[in-house]
Image (cartoon, rainbow, N blue to C red; front, side, top):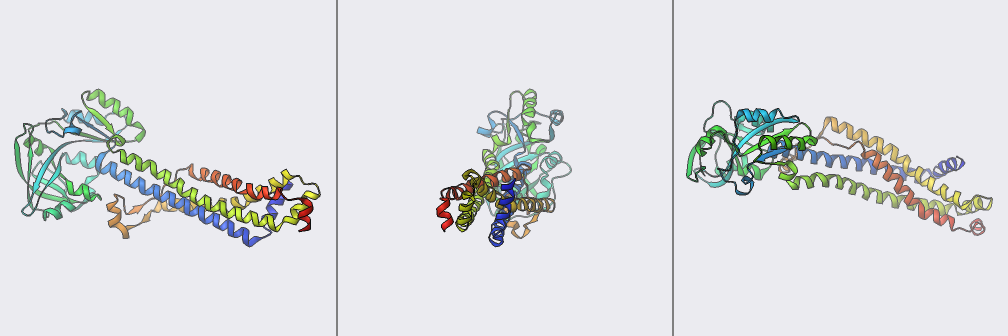
Length: 404
């Protein structure tokens, strides 16, 4: 206990230097926590947008459809089957889609797109797709020849709401079929490439052209909890034994890498801050040891063991770092909590954010264990930083130190 009191008093003998180190620790931790939470918030926003807007948590297809994309590779289905899927424990929303590669043409441009035949109500429940409309209306009412296209595609085709476009594709018998559609609405999902290559029509209307009845190519499911996916997959295999069921990370492996790397980035950033902290502490404690050479020599001369001198230097280093760390962790937590509630408005950079597939308002997120891990890292950094100055102190000869 006496060593603890002595160590605490010693760090305040040079208030300016100690406060400078504490301030550096404080600012570093606040900046580190906020930056890490912001990165995590951006990654979560992108993940949620990608899941909700495009791939969902789970997709089901004919085993050969992903590879061949042929119209006849369907899954037999009807509204009763869809209702059974929705009753599976853990399923939040579900919808079925028809998918076909086709050519889209206007008076000024022709190109290729992936055409989705959707059930408007269940699609909007699953993906909230209607919120991305920037012009016109969503597909509502009875099945008709209305079509939704992306803003990028509309610019290429030089069309707007009410314009007439022609789609050409092969039916299940590989016969070429063409149909005229009227642009009902224009959307912007935040992914330029996706908007440029995707269009949506009524599933019933498209299925009639393709000759596939009530069959579908894709079943998309949004789960209540990401931890329930394997249980849902097992249930789907029972209902659709001749189909392949894939979870989000199997559909988009790059998305899983992105989610995993966000946590790695946070720790790399913190480690860089800790390296800076380590050099600051090392420099401060070396200066303290050199300034107190005579004092340390006298302490050893009157009977203080080298072990106690070592512990004294280590305690001073820990107190110096923890004094700033405690305030920094608390302040960083409050800062993150405030922005997690109110959000960080980046609407000024909305164009860039949309390109990244991220909402213009970011809600920072911090894992509850992160501050505790950070505290452990700070203590470990302090201990490592104290070793060299403490060894320097132990190497002093009491007689020579007193003479200095």
